[in-house]
Image (cartoon, rainbow, N blue to C red; front, side, top):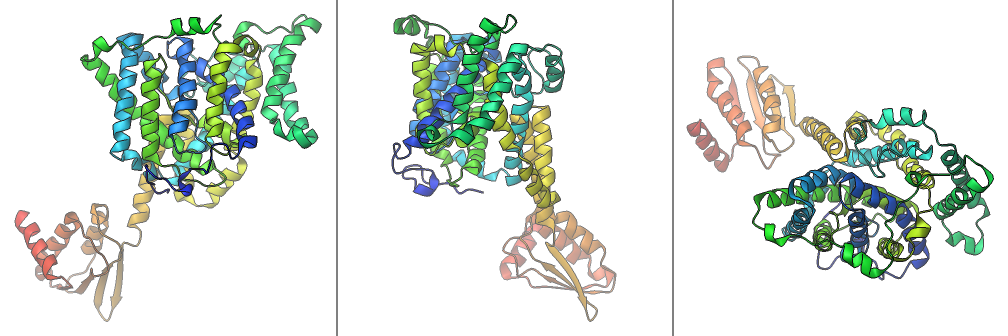
Length: 530
């Protein structure tokens, strides 16, 4: 796993770059692609949370600009997360939106404190198989969740990652329902956008290499959706099938729509309870996403987790102060950034800038983009995340890697990102414990002497194994316990050894242990305490 880096002065290996402007040829097109993907996700998550649509866009803008500038992760993209939608919806219903914004601000302060206390190190304890399983599961989820949008069935909100959907369907029944309620115009858009992924890479020459395929697909989708009704009577797409940015006639209208926290509720225990919940869940999702994005990074840079928690904390405080939803690092947007060729934090910053100007200046134009076109872009992203090569690699790595990987994939698909990952972590820990126990106690026999050798530090996890070995020793044996190869023996194991030594004479067993004076003193205390 990765190693935590200094927050104040990260080295190049921890994700810092010589300049934010060093790779603009790659970062600007990537930022544009992320902007196109992120905008409907921000709107969908705000809608699912029962919050104003503008609050989702504010969170996306702040996540792109503020968090990215403060972070040291080269490829992570932050914004409102579907994993928080249930918590946000419940919080808004209980507190009201303005008091909930206060909870979001306090959650940001708590995240900053977690970063200062260097608790970001938790990210380095997620098993590798689980992180890879999380990436594969996100890929599967993206494909499954976007299939309905690709055929024009847009009942579920963009960005949903839960098995049970707010519309009463689950991930699989929604697909079945979608294919019973097809929208022909959306299917035409989907097929033509998919064709862009086949044709455009073959015609890219010279300056055209600067134009990413996802952008071409989205532009083609928008043009087709606009012109199709003129040549086909049934070719129109209703507003529910298009991006739906709120329209403002001036900057002043945007300012008037901004809501601020209700500071008069600062002493309300419910506000603090929800703030604590948000801080914990948002931090866990951020750390999981950060670890996953580092594995996707072609340059294998390591992001400083404590710095990320502090950046997320500042971002959440800023977002809540101006009416935005809570922010986390988000794996879908980050994956799109990687696949679009992003190199530095500038791609995420640029996506935030584009979102800001999109809200202010280009909402009418962006509202012509069909969700089916964006579904094609996301399906390509998802397919790459859960590639057959990854599955083959994990299979060849053995059961101890493949089972936690596969369980994580299944658990995420049938629950949600956070619950599924935690299930995967538990399974991964079970296999880690089994590996730790393997060959920790070696038994050998030579010239009627039974040698019991400890080869690993002995924790309570080896207690059962030690008991089994000692129980099987026949009476009237000569036993030599070699413990000089380990630095630590847990009190639980020491107590088992003490009990065996106490009963050995009654069984005619001659016992020899290479106990140091410190070991003898510790053994005496354990026996007395027992």
